[in-house]
Length: 124
Image (tube, rainbow, N blue to C red):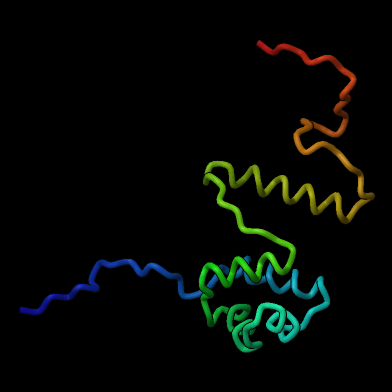
């Protein structure tokens, strides 16, 4: 009797981090002016490990990824899937403001012409 226990079983870990995430990690590291070796020494791991993560050859453990992301002044958050487009839009707007005039505006304002001196309106 031959039991194939792997048939129909989905692997728990991906074969690589998504390319978009790997690109973001590389860009964040380069923005700090750090080489792979610099980041690795700050994290207490080898440069080859950083290279493997960035190239997609290594899938880091969650704690390693979290530490790496935080070292790069970023963070990982869990967002309900339905809100992902909203969060992505906020991040894109933030990046546009960083590149532009640096105009500061409320995160929750509906538009750029929001005037806080107006009295709140009841909507029906």
